[in-house]
Length: 322
Image 1 (cartoon, one colour):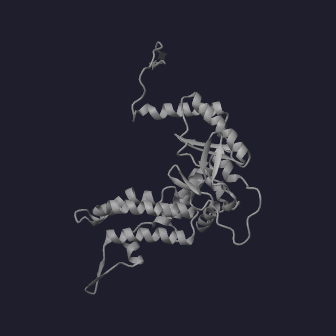
Image 2: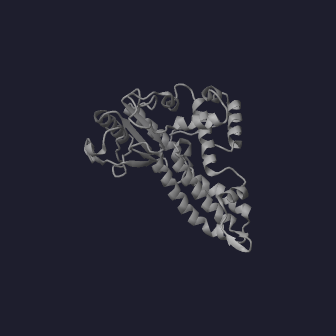
Image 3: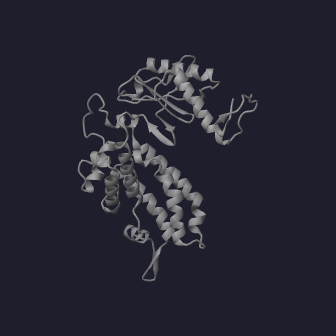
């Protein structure tokens, strides 16, 4: 390899030692190697699954390979596996799972799938980049997982919340900076129902009651009511905070180039018809419902203007009914 020094390349030299764990160059070099693997495999990351047979999503060493048919999936997997072998990389078969998403009843699906010489177990959900992806595209599963993770974080921070040496302001800062991000991680993509919102708010009130403590009423101590909790908190609740993040993300998606995969997926129209009964709420339904409360019309065009969209977010933050 060579090293660039003040614009000039040095003489070639041989490297005999690899990078140590934690080296700053490790991530960069691995991404370069993985990009080479994807190109050798002939798998394009552009476009989306609505308009082609396979779709590749990759972030660091987390790869998600989607396909419309088993045959397309097998061809893409074999190409990826062979290209990885040429670069000295190997797919971890133990950590690789497969999931089927769609209207097909789960009882008709095989419990395992064989691709080449490898067999993978079918799962109903898996974790990708910290978020749970469910076969029915149900956000409730991810919300429940977030609440469990936040509850573990809460018990880890409980000695600080019980401390008599820390001020109430410091405890609230700890909650907002350390605990709330765990609770609403990935909330920009959630589809929240009233039941989910109530559960999320109930968990926040439990923490705030611990921080604020009881109140003395006519000589006896009692727990604070919900109204008293938020009066003392004097900030937007966690659901309001999550909805603001979702609106902010919607603005980013609206401003993406038209050829961006996320933008194409956002504007794509799935084939087929929706099932009987009340249709399930979609992400865009939540966004349009929140934007309507601010009085904004034609939010997609408004979001293309960053300054105007910031004004909408400011209005949404101050809106008590969001």
